[in-house]
Image (tube, rainbow over all chains, first blue to last red):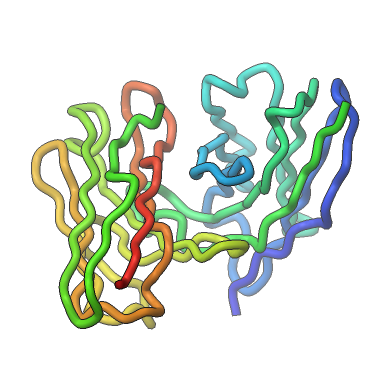
Length: 119
Length: 110
């Protein structure tokens, strides 16, 4: 079955970087974008950006421009999201989700990775 | 402040029908498909509706979606206590060149 499995919880200091992975299985990895969505504790969903495994193209929400890097590794069917210059406001759960907004939307989600930023 | 506007909460009795609205603008809902997601505490969002009104396999027809102009609506009929969750609408914004979500609506089944 189609599955996205994310890496484990992270605890980071303010100013550090975090890199979250998302391993895909059960479908052709290069056929769909990988999106990243975060959710601060007790808050709503916030779209961060996308990466296309076939083209290597990416697109980021303006809020994260300059601080986020999304990459993919077609050889290992894995997507990565790296966020730098962390502050306490980056504490939350980060999800990967495959799909195109104007087609089947975000139809499969990872289980989420909790990132805690402490000072 | 979310780009898409949803009511923070709605409530209804078991068996009744509830609707959740999602208001946007000409650059998002008016020109792009809307999707809806259901989220229980501590779990990942689950897709309920895509392309305005289509349901993924396994989603009962009690859940339905529609879109008109700059607004979209999720309707849930035959409410069950297991439907208590937070519901999010989402779409693409062509001006921002970004995905956008509503702030979420918490459904209480009384």
